[in-house]
Image 1 (cartoon, helix red, strand yellow):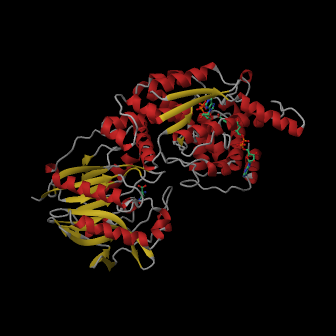
Image 2: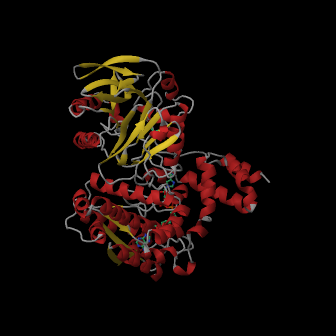
Image 3: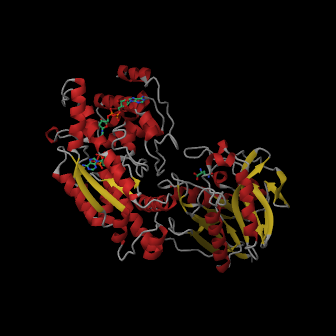
Length: 615
Ligand SMILES: Nc1ncnc2c1ncn2[C@@H]1O[C@H](COP(=O)(O)OP(=O)(O)OC[C@H]2O[C@@H]([n+]3cccc(C(=O)O)c3)[C@H](O)[C@@H]2O)[C@@H](O)[C@H]1O
Ligand SMILES: Nc1ncnc2c1ncn2[C@@H]1O[C@H](COP(=O)(O)OP(=O)(O)OP(=O)(O)O)[C@@H](O)[C@H]1O
Ligand SMILES: NC(=O)CC[C@H](N)C(=O)O
């Protein structure tokens, strides 16, 4: 019988913040030793952070990272650990996992399959390692083996699949590790959060891996909003020969978490199993991930809080709720004192709303086109979560700009001739003053742009797109609306009731014109369907039509598809200018992390003609 306590540690890192990163790693090792773990896996590139981007191409970064290894060695008496760092050989950078056992470096495994989809651009920085190849490198004055290695320590043999290695079904290093008799595969990861992805990891990477390679499989992810956009959920998963042994509670606000499991390598039935409490519900996952993302963004950007132009509509309201969630979840896990300290809040807090009031300032900026209903919704919501609520009108500014331009061009602007101009000047007049509030508060201005608006450019540039962080730019309007209803009921945000009774409207035209988003655009559920086919599945206009025609009136559908492609095309420049956004699911239109499209193009002119000509 061969039993061993193994574990994973997730850490909340910051790109090349050596002090933060090494402290987290060392504290995790110390905790692992307290839990009597013998083999501890830490995440991919945890020494530098995964998000160093082009710094990985420098000569100094990987050299500097190697110095940190010296520090960790001192903490490895009686334990075997692996930490991730970039390894530069000649002019080439590789992505490595360094194994240190009982104060000795055993080797560095180099990643064989690089992630190059969606938010990942690894081939820009790293070269893949060739299976079977081993070389010698220096770490300090020591000569160390690097490449495709297996290790013998603590009485067992083990090897690695480094993140993407485990996702490439036919090219997994695990096949060869199995032939080499490995009993344990470690998977140190930097696997970005996307709703529903944890279940996929669990089944396809970990459980399938442990079954196919007849081994124990240990997966460890990074934690938190490391570098601005991607969020890591801190997943740790352990399975043995197809049986799930342990998963941790994800999205911790702590700097590190350790999960251990006593494994019987000869008989899975005798291995420890840990009761699963982590919820994989998408709505729940989303509130946890955004809560943590906003917490990390605030503390890592050293901002004093958030400012929000709160209309009482769905988009700005959901942003307010996520700040409340950040506070509620953070205070619950860390305690009021540690939470206050982490965010450098000025005053102590007796209740979570005391923290919201220090962090979040909202402003309702009415015009003569705004309704009492939205003002009431905004105020009710802000009061219900303890946010500071300001209220003013921007009619003076709108009138002043309008008069000036009318005098200059020598005619009046009317709703019949200047509809878009008159709408946009209102959205833009809200921008300078809300930025002022952000400057005064030294806070981050949240922009409320969502993905559906991003698809079709339904937002005023430098107006309601103003802001430096776009928390919901990855979410579709359909998802946002259902999430808000869920949050009112399940999370108990009673202050959302008036928000959930509203129909989405920009309130930019005179009230008697009854402006609604869906009348301006198309029904949001249909927009989401067209987006799915056109953008996610990259279908041509005709292919989108063929996919959807059974379910909708063909003439109306054609019109909507044409509108979608036309607006999608002319608004690429706008998507390029939306503030940095979080990556939240596998459909994203952010050109910097997911979906690239030319700013100037044919606008699908031929393809739309083909659609027109089809019956
Ligand atoms: N290819 C290109 N490259 C660079 N710039 C380009 C461009 N095409 C147009 N432009 C520029 O873009 C300008 C037009 O963009 P922009 O001024 O933003 O305005 P635009 O996209 O024309 O209109 C804004 C739309 O968003 C809606 N909206 C606004 C505000 C809030 C809400 C809401 O839901 O609450 C909705 C509004 O109803 C309207 O349909 C043009 O004047 C031109 O300067
Ligand atoms: N009266 C207002 N006061 C303050 N901010 C406003 C006002 N009207 C619009 N805004 C800002 O402009 C943004 C864009 O408006 P938009 O209508 O797209 O979103 P929303 O009002 O939050 O939601 P919905 O589209 O469901 O009405 C708002 O989220 C808000 O930040
Ligand atoms: N860092 C990586 O290799 C990540 C790739 C992997 N496909 C994931 O998203 O989880």
